Length: 259
Image (cartoon, rainbow, N blue to C red; front, side, top):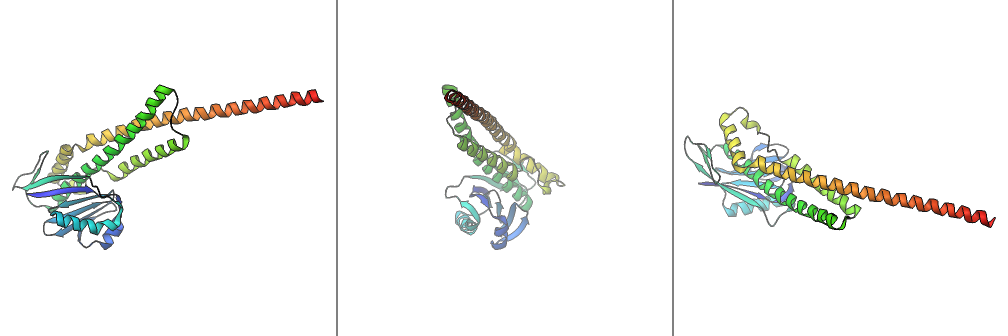
């Protein structure tokens, strides 16, 4: 039995700098990913969005790899979300179960697909936690609005909250390719089947949609908060104008009677 284990080690990893300085044999690269062979039948997969995945590596080797990667992490997490799935080799068998994967051979591209999907599953777990916290915070403001008839958040805090939500949405769209199939699967039926089965087993698409729906709900609430705040500011401005007009009229009357 072999093991694939993925860790969320940072918000982002500097892929370009990693490529220049890490010691392992580089097998695949693009602007967001680096796939290395660290030793015989052992692999390391590094993703721009802060994920590192290992195949067939013992804890001591993983810790050593963490220390090599740490300088390129922004920031490096001491507490790491992780997910592990066993991989078995059985000739002429390709099967994905909820708790393990069976491959017909130690095929580099098959291993890379298992590592890719495991890493995306860990990333989705992280984004799910973040969006759940944002939704809970949004619900606090809506409950206050329901009970008090007004908002309990200032204009500056609301703008920062909106910016936070938009940044998270952008990170998800930029970093996760849940609906895209890797190029290696386009002309290989076996690899395409493995990739499809992995996505279904990890439930990647449904989990992604849940996160997306949460963000849309949060955005709708924030847009409502913004409209309420804009209306409040508009009403305040109208009252200021009315008061200034009244003062000017009173001043005219006083000036007329004094004359």
